[in-house]
Image (cartoon, rainbow, N blue to C red; front, top):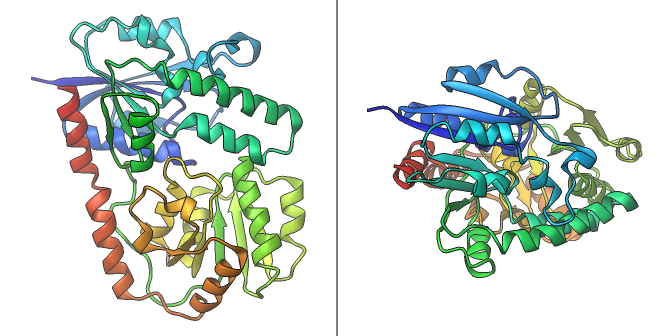
Length: 374
């Protein structure tokens, strides 16, 4: 007997140009390989490109317009939720009794409208969004954006405290799992690692050419991290440093060229970013946000050489042993100088294979979802 599932995504889960897409696409692919018939629903609002790859893994695909601006605004519900409440989506989900996976708290505004019956609903929590938006506000320079982030964090905190108790929830980190169990009193919360799109550890032995920070540079937190590295770490040490990512600001682009040994690669293609990750000798990926898990760090661990982070980047991930951890500019500069002429060796590759293989096993984690839903 065929088993079907609806998966509702906050955004198109392909192409793989940001962390959330990697987890969503990896999950779709893994469930398909376990024989699950997938009915995909996603919100289209960023024009992120061709989704033909998804047709290989989905029985049906439906897209919906997110209600942007005033149409999606609510005084009581977070904008990331209210702008994704869609009657057509509810109608399509209520045509059958298949279980539903809601990707992100973003998609949970429709739960009360679903014909529950005997169907199971799994909510994939990508972050403690209330904390995430609070941190976004902290690093946002634009006054109006900062006000939006502060208000969104306030609404999210209230909304998360009212999440329905009859859904099953899965978090991407053990830290977030504890937060939703203890702070938000959700009874059915489990840790479920992210679904990765890298099948094996393939970091090359030897010595690379430069240090690399990569990420979506239009996100204020990522821009803040890149600027902090430029101003506080790479002014102390004369080591080649490359920043790569989408939509860098003029300020970041200018600062990246103030020193002869630093530069920026704006809007790299997927092939270009993969090439940079493979050629770098040190991945330096500090974070100012300790919620969720950093997919760029996983990318570096699967495909790159040495990985240098701070505590916030690895907290709750169980990957501390695979990284070099420092929490100040001096500490990070010292670690970089120690590693820059130190070859990346087979022993470190073996450690990563064990750690990553034990945690990020797509087949085993897909089977956990199946056990929850059927």
